[in-house]
Length: 177
Image (cartoon, rainbow, N blue to C red):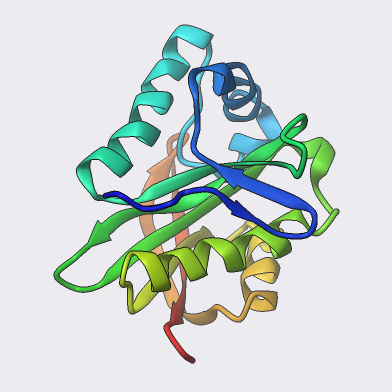
């Protein structure tokens, strides 16, 4: 997938991951508050290399694109967001996002998610972007609604996490809706 992956808003830079991001990715994906409702966690920098490879493989394999979400001057790493599980046949992908807790509540997600969606619709040719949110993750559900994702339903007790069944709420955004 050859696309220009660098995106900007007035406050943010979304760019490709590089090897220097591993410590920040580890900081996020080992933090109790971040991984509480997230499907992946790591307990060492070495283990986090798996995630860095996953980011690179998305673009290489044409199955998505994730971005490092940073300050406009690229000096502060806020988190990550992007698209994965891209289906060219069905013109859809799954959106994901996480922020380091010290940056929660500053509107970063609200600023970055439209860029990610525009990238999916305009550069990747998607028709549908879907998000699967743990039903107990009220903050994320509220954010999805504010970002004009439509709640389509709930898959009850569809996955096991930490030995317990969890339910997932399905949100979607359709191009030009």
